[in-house]
Each structure stands twice: as C-alpha cells, then as structure tokens.
Amino acid sequence: MVKEVLEAFGGVDILVNNVAISDRGRTVLELDEELWHKVLGATLDSVFLCSKYVARQMVDQGRGGAIVNIGSTSGYRGRSNATAYSTAKGAVINLTRSLAAQLGRHGIRVNTVTPNKVGSPVGEDVEPADRKRANLLGRGAAPDDIANAVCFVVSDEAGFVTASDVLVDGGALYGGAVDWGTHQRREG
Image (cartoon, rainbow, N blue to C red; front, side, top):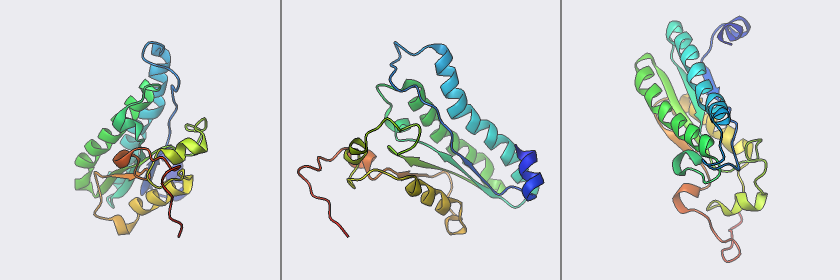
C-alpha cells in the first residue's frame, strides 16, 4: 500500500484508518472464535499495520504527518450485542494514545475521531429514529459530520492536537438518550 502511494503521490502525510466489520447480534455465548478473530483483524489489526508502515514512511520523510483512527462510542461503553466490535474499537482508542506517545517526537500527530451511530454500512441496520434518540442534538450523524472532524484534525489548525479523541457523537456519551417526544429541539 505504501509503495503505491509513493508512486502515485511522491510521499504520504496523512493516514485515515477507517475500517470495521461487526459481530452485531451476537453475545459472548454465541460468538465463535473465527468471527472474533475476523472482527479484530479487520477492525484493530488493520489499524496497527497501516499505522506501522505509514508511520515508518513519515519518519523517513522527516516532515511529520497526521494519523487519524476512526473509533466508536461502542469502544467506551461496550455493547450487549457486539462483543468483538466494541472490544476492537476500545483497543483502537488506546492504540491511538500509544502511537501518539511514540511518534510525537517525529512530528507525527495521532488522534481518534469517535462517532456514535452513523448511517454507514456498520450502522446500516440502525433505524434513523434510534440514531436521533441516542444523542443530545436529536438528529442522526451524517457521514459528513465525521469527515469534517477528520479534516480538522489533520489540518494545520490542529497542529498542536495529538493523543486526543474527538467525539462526534452529538453528546451521546455525555448525556445519553433524550426523549424527543417531551423535549423540543430548537431550530436555527
């Protein structure tokens, strides 16, 4: 992968690790070892391996860089129906901190952007109404909400931001669910 990027662009300054598969619908009693390893391989091992090889290139280039790993609020609180996914996402958040501690001296910033339920393939079976109830803003997150946070974190404006986790969850971890039947969202 790094070789292809170097051939196409002459260097690498930014890496965004955005990959996950889920074991949704399975508890520890139902989750087999094959799926456990498949989820951790795709969701955690890929982040480690891409970061390892891209970071080596960034160090060799000598001009720093930015790595962003996409987390999940499931990594903070676990899930009753996605054991491997929530475990892997929790590990991604902590891997980010370790990488930041190791790579900062090379001018490489490493951060996590952590969404809640988003209309994405991993969250595709989540009803839009459930995404709205799961946060303080009363609306579901859009992929652009996450993309905008990533663009900020890799920008020069965030040049002193590292080892951070940018929560893009509409306040879900802070306040949990809101009954929007009794609370009115302010427009504007």
